[in-house]
Image (cartoon, rainbow, N blue to C red; front, side):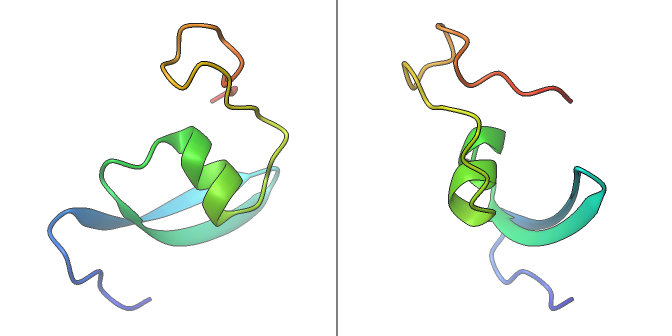
Length: 60
């Protein structure tokens, strides 16, 4: 995996449903946005966009 060039991003590995995903990702990216926008896993919904309503809850 190539190094991530910016100090505001990191390379992460997510194990989701038994499958590993390697992502260079910005530090400000939420888990919800990584799942929905980077991995196209849209089952988790974005409700209030503040984390208050619980629609974006994921099991970790």
